[in-house]
Length: 199
Image (cartoon, rainbow, N blue to C red; front, side, top):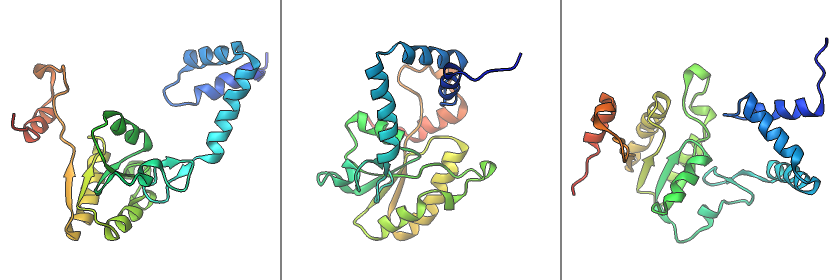
């Protein structure tokens, strides 16, 4: 018997293509949408289309926004002497949730990964260098993930930025709150020691 694509199977397949969504989760989401009142389902579909059409990259920091500049770049109260470099816009949201960081951001939209065919030219590095050359920036904080790709990207950027006389720092990594030392690997323990603070 031939496989027939129905509106339900098509909906499930679309949900399944989302990152982190398996077949069962896709089915649950599809049935949830089908059980929505028609008006809510239409509003849901319209919000997806509106977001896709209106959201683009900020002309300064490359964060996602629906205006020419993102709200952070527009905010005159932010500390313009420090830029936190992150991989993607989700990382900006994570930092903003802390309510502790008051500087600016720069979103690379990826990491250097030769295995995946991603080189420096595919990232928003040129825009970062233009910002650094044209402003009062005194420090760049490398906030890429502690992966091979994240470390490679941070080191590459540090080599480009340090000769400009700008301080380049890296996030401290170490033992998570509530973590147990006996389960930490050597690299994590080393980073915890290197990033120690006086109390």
